[in-house]
Image (cartoon, rainbow, N blue to C red; front, side):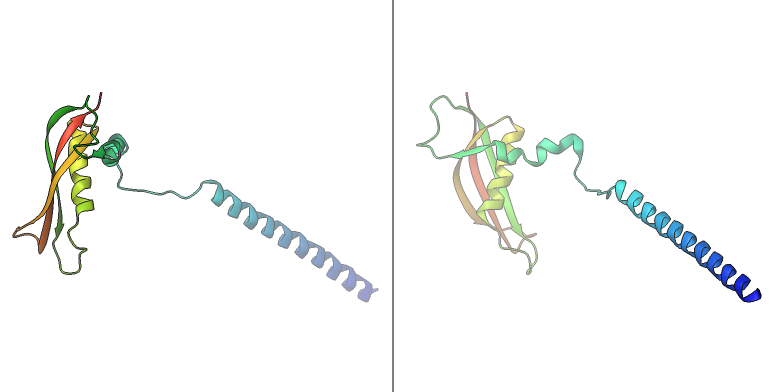
Length: 140
């Protein structure tokens, strides 16, 4: 009889252990799923209020004097620069200088720019500096 009671007790303990393990796994799995439902929180330095300004240059088209529409209205001169400040920086280049000039053009309400020149200039802060000059226009 004692052997029968011992076997019965072992079966009872085994059943209790299975229940505990099952509940533990269910709890762990539920917590894992709940943790995923909140999603990752990404923080950037982009200001929501000034979001359009970050991409202002994309709203300004580049033209030549020959391709500029006749209806374009001259707004003023713009310039942008590209500076190689350290030896391991990328070289000063037209692309960065023109992008900054296009941003400046967007700030004065231009939708078009005609670049007149891009030249290297001396600057004490830069190993090399490229400046691009242009004329900003409003397109009608």
